[in-house]
Length: 192
Image (cartoon, rainbow, N blue to C red; front, side):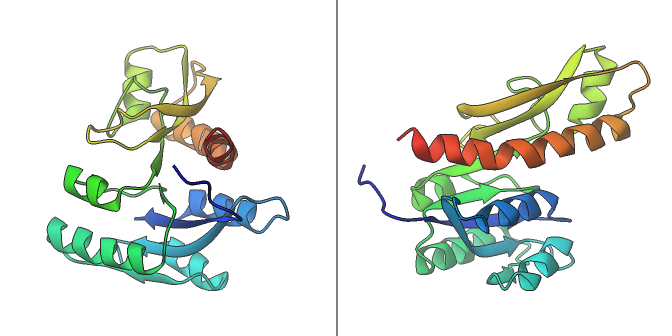
């Protein structure tokens, strides 16, 4: 694999508020940042994260195609046009097809609110509490063809206390997500 010089061009896929996007933007604006966010794409035109991207003058758009193939076809074209090096999923509530992953052919990273391989998919906080787990946390992993199954780059865990509800656990884990996504990207980029 050829070594890329300078900051890596990152695209971020979002579906909602964009709080992980905000932490990535904050990191990208630092002097020592290894990334430049060149593009934000959402599948939801009401995603608050789009306003955030606009505020920071980051090229952003919505691809609201109901059809998954149309969404992925358009997204691939735009990612290639922008010469994106890495795609980061940050609260993106769609599963990318194996075809998309293969055609993009560059790293795709995702942040997930559980200690993978535990609790893939949705409702992770509810599952952790229901199963009386002592710990939960967040994981950043490389996306592959299977849901939340790629190699884990970084994890951080927190203790679940008796008073925790799925909502309170979600809030605590979101703070962890904001800390570890940028650290995982740094680790990923410096371990080539």
